Image (tube, rainbow, N blue to C red; front, side, top):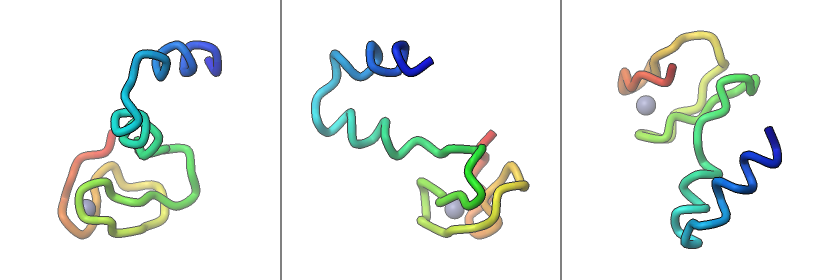
Length: 55
Ligand SMILES: [Zn+2]
């Protein structure tokens, strides 16, 4: 999976890489909503602050 990830990042601009690195990690204990920046414990599939779907 790590190799696939590297391949995906290969053709990206620095800006795109930065955005890709910010992709929400649903396995993390704490999630930061990419839309509003609200941080909350993983569990809900939606940001409790703005309602963005994360799943
Ligand atoms: Zn949010």
